[in-house]
Length: 135
Length: 109
Image (cartoon, rainbow over all chains, first blue to last red; front, side, top):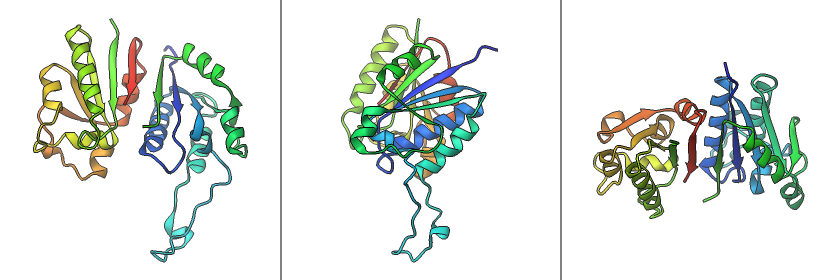
């Protein structure tokens, strides 16, 4: 069977837009189908795998961290990278200049640093490419 | 001939930008292309039968395939019986299948 690869370009920062949730759902579904996935995270999306993210309690509701079970994008991406650690492969590249601008270099293991040239190469070598821009 | 997969994430009652999607999908159909519109996030708010002036009935009449993400429908409390004719419940796996087809051009809006 011919191997298929999807490339996604993401731009939204975490906790801002439903776009991030949908993007992670697409990545998860593709990996479950055995489809390789490239992600090029651009602008605010480089903060999605930021290791410093912490789940929090909700003092308004009086819930603890454990009760709240606050999902962080870095935990979701860590799980996806574990699923995509071979075949299928999840290749996540953060835009280096976007990282430097935001001081967002402390990312989860498996996230690489790159440039828009990597996105161009990914798109050329993929079955299809989907750009999810900010509104 | 390429197929077109248009992904609509915007609420048509909030953003007039959705007219772009209707015009693009209709023009592509008129040129003989297969066009699928996948509604996700607030894009599904147009699917209700009772939605006045929804553009989706016009797209269905034009032969555009209309799919609505079940996760987004569920989040917004939209029941299957509320859907307009011509709109199919779908899921993110179907979107991935469509994306992974050769010669399919995908546009997120």
